[in-house]
Image 1 (cartoon, rainbow, N blue to C red):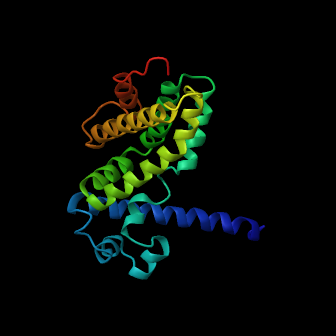
Image 2 (cartoon, rainbow, N blue to C red):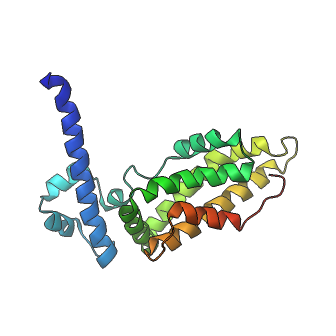
Image 3 (cartoon, helix red, strand yellow):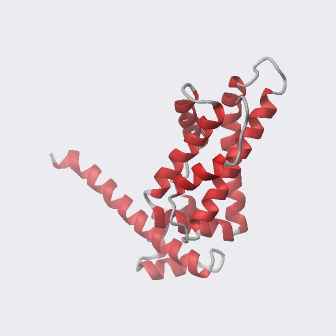
Length: 200
């Protein structure tokens, strides 16, 4: 009995420590600036050793990104869940709204992480790399649905996906300042309403 329960308990403990350490670091990044905060500053605030920090994170960037930002495959799978029953633009809206709902569930963490990313050029560049990976994964799925027999299908797909990513980013930036009463999911809906793709 003990052998079967121990791994689960260890996993829960590790996850709790990882999350607590990340929140401590993000608070420092948010108030002081990512580049100004060192690992030594983080471990001092958390009351642990640097050796312990590196058991959970390989570097400061991993504290901000970790494994919380969806992979390209996860975003593609979410899109595929919506494509069969919705017009293409609505499927994209629903895809990013699903991500927004998850972020609303951990509002404080994501607002702080977003502010840190936006204020740090190196982190912003890494975030945009993830956008490019998402786009690469989504373009074939959207192009398959749009004018399959014309050379413009991929161009239209890229336009729609980049517009969707832009809408999500606009909503995210406004939400992250902490002054919005709306949820991120509602902001995503509002911003997507500003853009229309006829016959898509």
